[in-house]
Image (tube, rainbow, N blue to C red; front, side, top):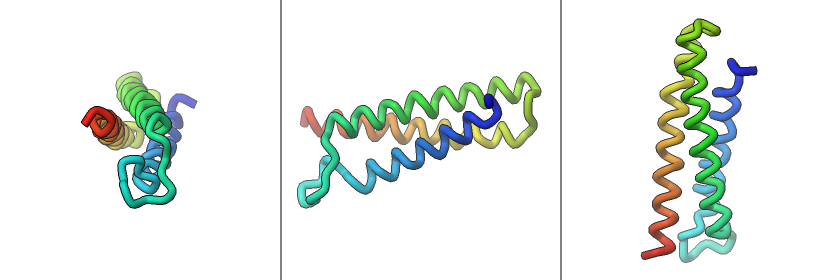
Length: 97
């Protein structure tokens, strides 16, 4: 299960990112907007999930539990985690600003 977790987290993170993109809570003209608190919670959950998956994929690589295929998940999960962190900060500054 530890070998599959980074890939499962990647899929969940992509789904969260696409939902946040489709139902942008800061868009003024959108009829179907996501509530802002829900969007913040989704971006935070996605960040934590993908950041932990990046750590697990590095740990699996150094334990030699899996090959280079596991190392491929590390940068993708890390980039997605940083994207979701940036999205969360953007939503938060949209509240304050």
